[in-house]
Length: 80
View 1 (cartoon, helix red, strand yellow):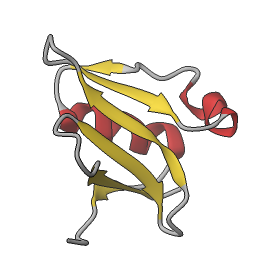
View 2 (cartoon, rainbow, N blue to C red; view 1 turned 180 degrees about the horizontal axis):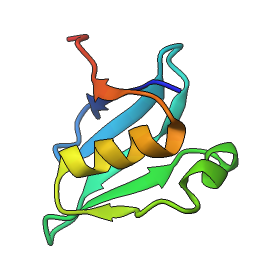
View 3 (cartoon, one colour; view 1 turned 180 degrees about the vertical axis):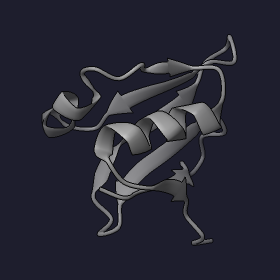
View 4 (spheres, rainbow, N blue to C red; view 1 turned 90 degrees about the horizontal axis):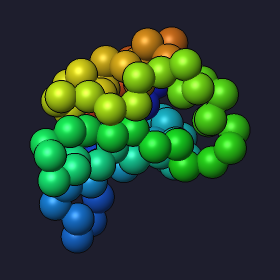
């Protein structure tokens, strides 16, 4: 499944994760300790992320983990 990463409106340290049809998959949140934490939006995405490392040192590392878990591409959205 391909995933698009978009900055969350109004939140400076949160990125929304959606599939190409616009369905919400989860979020990446930057913690006060500069760690990037992946959270699933719904129970249906808990299984793919169950074996994933959910805390990462960078946004790129978190995106790489998402791509690996969902067996697709994880990229920034180009919508404005």
